[in-house]
Structures are given as structure tokens and as C-alpha cells.
Image 1 (cartoon, rainbow over the protein chains, first blue to last red):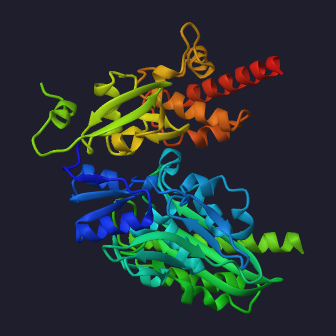
Image 2 (image 1 turned 180 degrees about the vertical axis):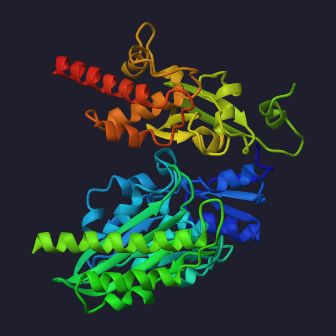
Length: 291
Length: 177
């Protein structure tokens, strides 16, 4: 399979990339890791006139935590960089848990975090972890930079709030206020398949009390499901069998699964409930051990 | 029969090509490519390195895996132009003139292949794993190879082969030390 013809540009600065996108007038597309875009080009689901390959722009492959505890992920930070990070599990455990579940190991050595969020696949793992934790995308265009809240960034399946002449230069995910706890669970039929259902949970703990609870779902709706309101019933409480049951029921209720070859809607909703319960129960055990 | 490679690479009026230089298995290669040429096709047809196999052509199977600056990538999911200025290692680069790479030897010793189609990708992914983690557990090996599909072996002997290679490489390291 072959992509249709395109003009190929390999800028070496963000400004140059923006100028190329601007000149493309909506028919130019950014190529970062390419692990979703190149298959789409080959299947001819996408046929942009110009490909703007940002892989030659220096200093975009970072991930670092700033003085306030916010995690900054540059546009060329690959999944594997996060998977092999030695600090991510301490500051952002939900992301660390998801890092090794994205696609398969070979795709992870090429694909990027920011590219995955920008692809806005309703099954995307990273968008779910970001919605559960909050955060924003830094978009840079001809008029400078702006921050786009993750909940306003993904507008629908494969549609984002990025303008045609903007580059998503980094993702910023806040650190926990208190002790960071969280995890990510995904059910897939085989490695690299799209999720049947997956759940991201992120908690900020104050001792054994939940100060903030965040949750998002992938694979169980036409977009990333924001379940932050549903799981907020945990806030101000400790993790007990009762509070965990209440939270997992509330989250399962906001899933929007549809029956397909991966399972029935009832099955997928059950998976969501089970995963929320499993994550919270494991976290409660960790808290008990720590105490 | 015209191959996809010929179709894409046949000079066409008004279609620009780009001159790229790629270090393939340690050797500098300079070629003119149309931007939509895939890395897998450059290697197989352009450079006649047919050890890189194309399986699914949809980023699923890992048969076309090569090492790109040391990291395993699916060469059907990269453009050849993106390799400009980078290093690519294919299965042809694993053995030296008379000596197999320990991973290749492991696949031979432990019968890690049947039809052989997935083998180049399996071995390159394994090589990258062992460079990063010289002492992997069986789980580490299975995890690292989870993006490479094999329809013959049931994976048991592939895992054994990689563990065999790990042991041999550690022993060789010990001798050097």
C-alpha cells in the first residue's frame, strides 16, 4: 500500500513548521511519530497535499517536571521515553501505568505522546490519562502560543481544537496536590489492538483521605469519556469498600459503550466497573501497607 | 510485473525526489527517493536487502522491524526520507563475515524459527532488548517481543533462543572483563 503523492517538508524550527502549515492553508499535516498518520496515509484515509515532518526540530524530545511539579512532555517525546522513565511512577503514576500499555513495543519506540493526543482517537490511552489528571496542550501558531485545556482540546473522534497553522509543541500535566496515586488498566484482545475498554484513575491523597479524584475512560464511547464528576464522590473520603463500590458504580454509569465485535455494551460497562474497583482496591491496599 | 517500488520510483515529470544519505549496516548509502517511498521498500528493492520482510503492511505484525538509531521500528510505517542522516540496521548487518550474532546463534541452537518469515524482525527486536537489558527474565523477553507476531512456533522456542543469546552474551562480557 502506498500513500498518495505529497510534498515533503522537513523544517528545523517550530517557526518554520508554522510557516509551512500556514502556507498549506489546511492541506498540510504535521508528521511526528507517524504511527497513526502513516497507516492512514497508506490506507488513503488521509491524503494531505503537504507533510510537515517535525522530527528534525531539535530539543522537542524532553519530558521533565518543573518546580511546581507539573510534567512537561515535548512534541517529540516517544512513548518509550516515558515507559523507561525512572521518575514518572513517583510523580505521575497513572501515566507510568499507561506507558507500557500503549500500542506495542515497536510502535512505542517511534510514536509520540503529543502526537497520540492530537490524533484524538476515542480509543487513545494518553488522552484518557490527561483527562483524568487535567492539563493542557501548548499550541504555537503565527500569533504565538496559547494553552488549550485538554477537555476543550479533543472535540470529537479525530478532531481537535488545533488550528490548521498551529503546532502542538508540548503537553503539560499538573502534579498532585498531596501524594500522587493512580493507575491505568486496559483490556485488549491482543497486544496492539484497540482497547475493548480502559480506565484511567488519578488520586491526590492527603494521608488516607482523597483530596482530588480524577477518572477518564477510553474505548467505551465515541470520544474519551470524562468521568471526573462521577468519581468526585470519593473526595473527602477514605478508600473503603463502600466508597469504592459507590465510585465504581458511578463511573460505570457514565460510560457510553456500544456492542461490537469486541463485546456487548453490558460487558464493556461491567469491565469499566471492575477496573475502577480493582484500581481503587489496590490503591487502598498500598495505603494500608504504607500506614 | 511492475513492483510498487518501481511504480513509485519511476521518475515522473513534476514529481520532485529528494537525495538522502542513510547509514545502512555501517555503510553510507546515497539514493534519490520520492517522499512517499516507504523505508521497507527502499531497503528491499532499492538496496536489495531482502532480509527485511513485509508481512501485514498495516503496522501490526513486526516482520519489517529494523533498528533505527538502535531502536526497533516498523519499516513499513516510516518514510524512507525520514531516514536521511540516520543509522539503520537490518538483519544483514547482524553477523560478521564468519560469525553469527549470538541472537542468531540462539535461534539456531534453540530452534527459534520454522518458516522464518518473522525471524529477522524477532532477532532485531531481541538484539535491541539485550543491549538495553543484558539479563532479561522470561517475562521481559515476552513483553519486548509482544509486537512481533509469529504464526508457527507458539513463541516458546523464540523466548528460549533469546534467553540463550542473553546467557552467551553475558558470558562473553565476563571473559572480556
